[in-house]
Each structure stands twice: as structure tokens, then as C-alpha cells.
Length: 209
Ligand SMILES: [Zn+2]
Ligand SMILES: [Zn+2]
Image 1 (tube, rainbow, N blue to C red):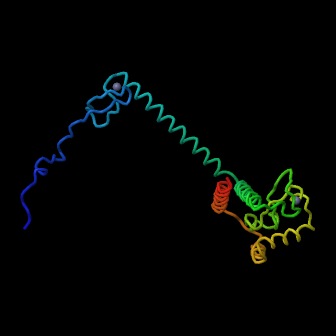
Image 2: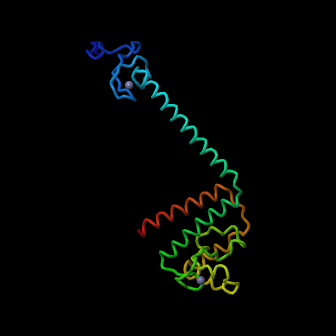
């Protein structure tokens, strides 16, 4: 059988329609305790506290609005950038990662072997001007000195490829070469490659610290 006897707890339970007895609160301005008379009352009834609170609150609201406005302008500016901007941003991130990876692996310039360059580049086995499809492939980008990258000449092409074969194997080089040269990248795809490269670089830097 059910127990019909009510517990003491039930009998003292407040009806939800009864107003709550206000508990003392701390004024957000003067930090004194006061009994609120309204449901939302952040500060005590003193005129000074109310004025100060209202002014502070207004400043905060204005600052928040200004921040949102700046973020919106920034987002709009980025959205209006041409795809070329996203392509070079992504290329920079991939090149930076690949240079760091090759340095961590102890490689010098991929084509002349130097460890002493006035400027390090990310050199493409298949130039990006030739293949837009393979330009972000990690196995297609290698640490290269500026002079080899800019003035390497056509004769170095075969040699470049043979070095890459020795490092990643023929199958990987064949895979890179089989990627269609023509490709139209979307901003989302570029963003994904960019984020991936940035994260990998961060992890590598952390591991080498
Ligand atoms: Zn106060
Ligand atoms: Zn070189």
C-alpha cells in the first residue's frame, strides 16, 4: 500500500506562487549589503551607486558593441579578399611547415645540399606555376636555398625529383605527378590545409623545444 502520510518536509514546502523572501545582496558599487526590492537590482538604492552603476554599465555595453563592430568589419574585409589571397596564405603556411620539418630532419637545401643560405624557401618539385593541384602537397615542397629555388634552372628538375624519390619513394612521387594540374581551390579547402599546416608546425616546434 502507498504511504499516505505526508512528511514534515512536504508540509513546510513553499507554494510556488508565494513570493520569495528577498535575501540581502552585496551592492556591486559600494559592496555594502542591502535588501533588494526588485528581482534584478545590482546595486544598493543610494543615488551615487545607481548613477555609477548605470554609467559603468553603459560603458561596458558600448565597448561590447564597438568590439562586435570591429570583428564584423574584419570578417567582411577577409570575405572580400580574392581567392589569390587565400592561396598564398595557405602556401606560406605549408612552405613554413615543410622548411621546419626538413630542418628538424637535418636536411640542407634539397638540390645543392647547403646548410648556409641567405634565405630559405619552400621549393616545389613540380612548380606551382605548372601544377595548381599539387602546390600544397607536403611531398612536393622541400627546403631549398633561395638561389636554387630562383635560378635552379631546368637541368635541376630531374635531379630534384631523384632526391625526392630517395626521400619519400617512387610511389609517392608518382602520386604527386598524377594529381591533375588544373584545380580550382575553394576558400574552405584552403582554410583546412592552412589550419592543418599551422597545427603541425605548432606541434613540431613544441616537440623540438
Ligand atoms: Zn551601494
Ligand atoms: Zn640550394
